Image 1 (cartoon, one colour):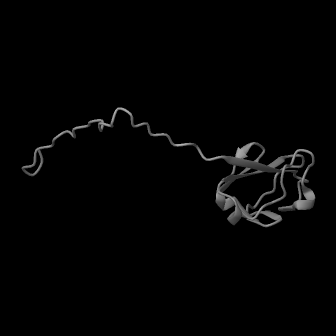
Image 2 (cartoon, one colour):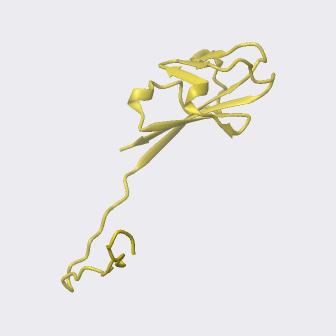
Image 3 (cartoon, one colour):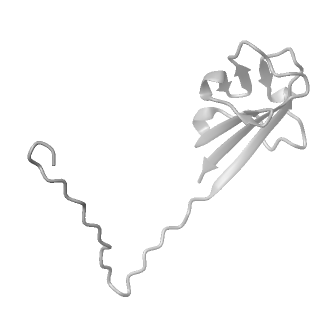
Length: 112
């Protein structure tokens, strides 16, 4: 008891539904596209021309046109502060660059 108030535990209950009522929510479909590139050990900026094919299923898309995106460098998910993405261009904001031969993957997810 604190300040004269009694702490009561909440009462949890399951709402009753009509017996013939079935609620169904279909999941949204997702399209996942990816951009693959390999670091040359010098540059911080990569463009559509640097994409590896047939691995890449997409060019670098505008971030406003996708639901969300993930950036992986050497299979490590990168925080948003480490990069800037624009249509056709990916730039690193870090002081160091990935080692030569390091995989750069941008995963674009769009819900439809």
